[in-house]
Image 1 (cartoon, rainbow, N blue to C red):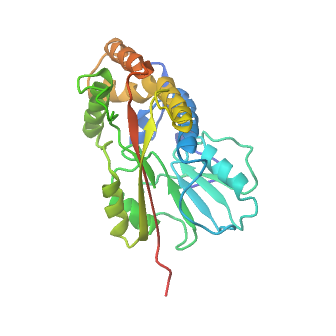
Image 2 (image 1 turned 45 degrees about the vertical axis):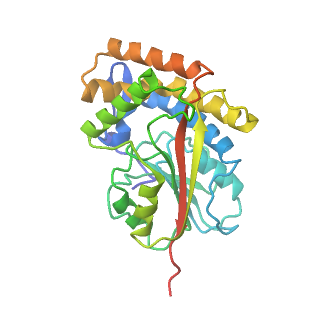
Length: 295
């Protein structure tokens, strides 16, 4: 983990099909960094609306000692939380594999290069008041038990659903989700998840007061509720913006698809998601708990 000079290996990127990927081989390195950065920021706004403007649900002190964000991406969550807690006694720290975050940030914000799958972590015990992560299942965290032993979460399931059968099982969207999961398993990570899996993984290392919220992030402008429609607008924008960047490496490296073949499927997926009659959504799981106080 480092906040100082960066080695050439950290700054190295592989170019494939005209897109840049992080040279460090991890699940998250399968995504192109160009469109992915824009997609992450759009997705952040979609979730912020879905969560009624909350950055997190866990109750914490008004002056927290330290807040840690795992898999921070562009760092937008960390910077907003740093602004929300300007009187924080400690820092708001964001960690990720790549130094893609801005250099000019609030004074209580710090970014560090860190692979969250390398255990043990180097943070001092009991030094962090809130550990936050979102949308990391499969992409960054392959095995939740070890992850929560270190923490000692907002996630999603990579399968789009509809409650009124407007997204049939033979749709292009379902085909894309199924193939993404198939490719993920071949690459060594599982993109399917449910809140019960997270709850059990948090119970094992001793978390108490675990709370589970099962939410739905709409994809598109179909909801009647204005807030959910606004969230769905950003949810759709995130997918349209980043669909190729998310898909390219998984389909070409692990499923043996040609780029031209993939583009046909992605065009069908985009077309379905743009149709208001398709009432699809992502399952979103908010799970949080507390570490027992030391006796």
